[in-house]
Image (cartoon, rainbow, N blue to C red; front, side, top):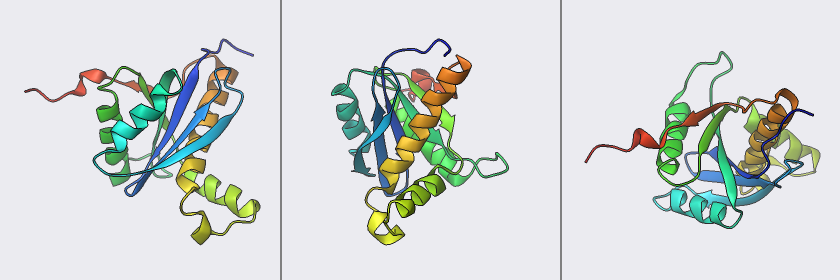
Length: 157
């Protein structure tokens, strides 16, 4: 196993209506779902409250790209959420999340849930997928996944 930065991470799947939130244990063994946060003017504050409960090392936010690796309208939305979150005290890292929601739906179907009765938790499961892939990548390669979002993106007054 390569060098792994010990610490709890918060995984985030940003959507138009909801934000899925997950966490991993400090040793990065397992990502688990925490909460689905409504996407409103309080979403960033709620995610920060959750992170404060876990002595968070960093946020890991999914960066939605299309299958060709190109940006989409959802990409800009996730970046904007990440930039707002980065104005706090915890570093924000963005990682490629292609197919995370598809993987989440597949996992839920495999557990006997249909798409309709999974709507309330699919974002949490997608956040788990994003976070687990990031911690597995770091453990396997010894390098931090994705890229950091600078807290200096704050607009000028």
